[in-house]
Image 1 (tube, rainbow, N blue to C red):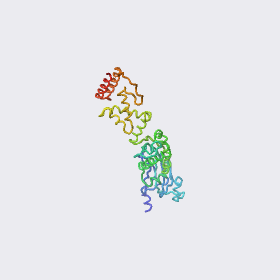
Image 2: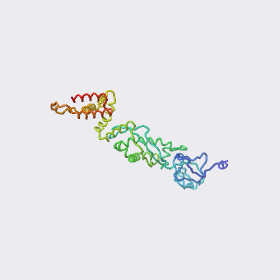
Image 3: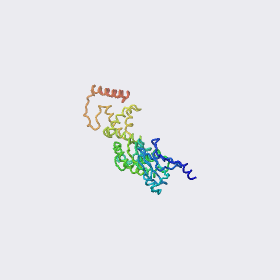
Image 4: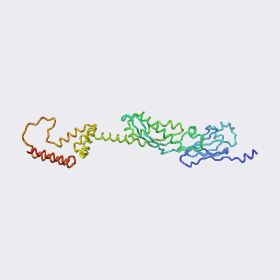
Length: 344
């Protein structure tokens, strides 16, 4: 009866794994009730490693190649099972294959802005994203920390952990570097190298190697980016004074179109900036070029009337303001009547 049971048993003669996808990182060879024939063939292809595990303990590890399984090629398993060197019987052992192929074009990014302390802007929130690549180097560590006894373990099961770990180290890198956001955004390659150096030990504890990590973009949320763009625009125009003059020039035509004409310019521009007086003074000079400056000495008494040439020149200037929409027709007519009286 024992002889019949032995004859009915199925023995494994060839152990190999043909990867059927690019995501599986660990795969357990199906054993069922079968046993491995002594002298069976083990084929480990390039970008693979095979591990024999006896009762939960990692035994022999094989790199790429073809092997004949005997007590000589399975020294650790032979020791664990107390085999004699002349052992010829089939044996049972779990066999796991691990893919060492590089996993490329893996995405990482901040799902929400990360708050960091910046030397130039104080506390700011930023976003970053990029790609990374890694591969398995230590099947024993990978089996012990991640894949375990699972029949199949894929990179998709791992990516969430890796991505969150990358994002979690961004604020640390910014804090340790002391480099302002503006400079860091212009040195993304350097930032990527610093981040990779920070992450290498974490990957190693999983039995992985982080081959590359690229930062493709570092940016601020839209509302903060709009403020930064405005600040850059101010600096490009020569500072706040030049920016204020530019804003004043832009606002004059708009204010003149509002109800109240030029009277509304001071109120429209002077809120919080004190520009009302500046604009009012400038417009007073434009509307009444014949008036004496406020700080000038009183003019000498004279009875000579205003010349016709001066009046004509002033009216031409005022007419130009009407054409530009800065002066209304009624205001022009009133000023015209006032100047014509001076001719008398």
